Length: 279
Length: 328
Image 1: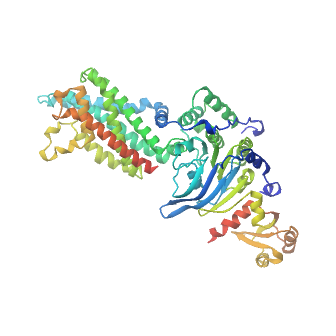
Image 2 (image 1 turned 90 degrees about the vertical axis):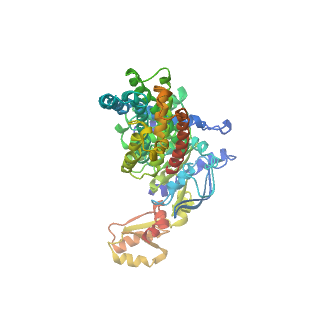
């Protein structure tokens, strides 16, 4: 340090006690958390977006068109296989985006970087911090689903103008999985335990939520399974946008966006509450 | 240490500041505060008051409850019992408002390593919703204050440990805090950096800042504190001005020597001859006495080569009050 004697003393402004509250209102505190994430992770946006964007494209090419060529004497929800997959690819993108952020990302910030320990010493409360995180998860999902949607549009699998609403469903889907991942993270003591979550919870969800095959082809005893999964409702919501109600998997598909919204609120609230107890 | 005893920190100045704010309530009013973690009672009914404008040092061995208490005062950790007011507010009920008025230097240097110095301060300011030209001027002023004005474009990992610590202090001052909480501000730093940081903290104190300092370094407390509280196993076992704490608990002078060097001497002094008070901590033996003469006499009498006669210090008080328990 340079000679302390020469350093100017900072101007300490006399704190004005009568000036009312000094804390920012709650919505600004949540926004500040969101903005911190945008600032810090925005630098790595391209790197982070790469798997979320390229994986669905490779799946569309290899499975949608490649394997699909063998399947196209059949119809999938009255569609060719590649077109059928489009909605599912959007859903999986959002699911993994949120799961990685709110499982690994949150755990690293909690345990290793101790990001929250620094934040909790400021006017931010525990609720502000995790609401901001959830908002960030949703934002990433909205962005990545928009990019994947644009690519699918080039392949002609998105109907317009409905496709312009993709980011909204992307936000809900990612926020719902952000909440679910918070719940998991709040119980986990080692990052290795996330393997259970990804392998036993998320991977089967991909296979039984109408990405690979229509859920109406499930055996009768298992038809209830996809209905309980947030990914099914997310994919059906995307399907309403990109393909339209004529290609829905269930007759009541119009309710799926509302059910997704409900799941998003319930999982978000539960996840935030769990993480508040964890910090 | 000897400096603390021979020239006690000026107590006159804070009293002057306090009388200027005579009507203002204490910055921290802590009455019987309790915090438990499972079966462990980390803070067990602590009562302490910190008036405006002073530096209060919480001393205690590791695990005494210093950090737990300062986290409760900092509105980060809820309490399990007792009454607590910080700046006249209940941190349990007005968490965000209390924290908006505090500056906190955590034990660890926590930054966003991917951002440079300036961006780190900007993000932190945003948590207080501080932005704009006035805030940017504040940032520059504080960077100058801690001597980092040319480092604003540097990455966090390019900074030395001392620079990171100074940046933590600058960051804690961004919101014009009314109380600065420092959790072990100079642990692990070299002596030059420690003195430089102490100089900055003394400047802050001189400008009227109230400071709560937790430390296990007696020299740090002696350098900065107007009042010292010793925490032990979650209880505040002593509290006073540093010089008064020494005067109240121990005779003025102490003879310190290697207990293994002369067993004969240890045997003789264990009987507390001539009103002396013998203590032992590890390999070091201590004989306290109101006068210097008998202590110097024993050096000659027993031909102690490693002995030293010095004024009793805060560290001796600390060892006396908390040391025995460590031996248990």
